[in-house]
Image (tube, rainbow, N blue to C red; front, side, top):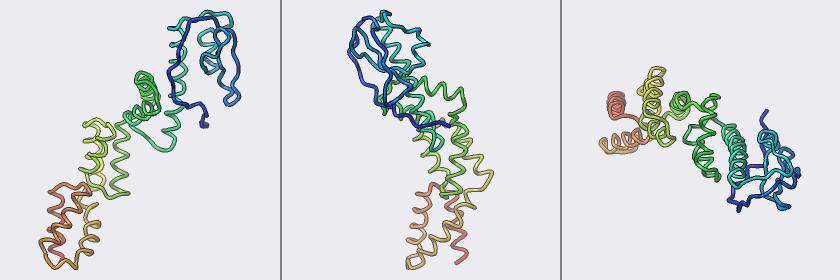
Length: 228
């Protein structure tokens, strides 16, 4: 099971200088990481796996370019762990993960690399996310298609996936059937409004905020008027 790491510190720029590796020292707070020393001075931290991956050893000369490559590889691992932690609570969109990582200080190319890898692994899937999100918002919140569309757009979901999600949800349960019981409760609360036009206007505004189309709202209002 994935465990939360303590190594998600925000990446910070370092002044790098070429030189020889003089020591590796295990970090106390995270046994999976080591501190790398160049010419006797601390340079930066690395995950231990990277020592073998890059065949690092004492006495090896590292150019500034090579050091940046090592730091990129290290930040990529950090970013993956950070993204996994972010996904642990609920599903996210590609945009949400990118924004989260860049907000944590990771460079855009690192965030993009994580997103691409997670897409390959199936950890991210905007098409499935949109369908699940739309279904949940309809069944649990009683939201209409327009509101769901706006919310998914803000999350960076492609228009084609949004449309598919809304159509799939409408096939499960029509917007009219979802909106009617919600509107009936609001209609009852508005019973004290003496002006019929104002009462209808307040109901219409309420359903607009919920994200229903004007056609659905018209049908709902007509139904409730006939019930009175």
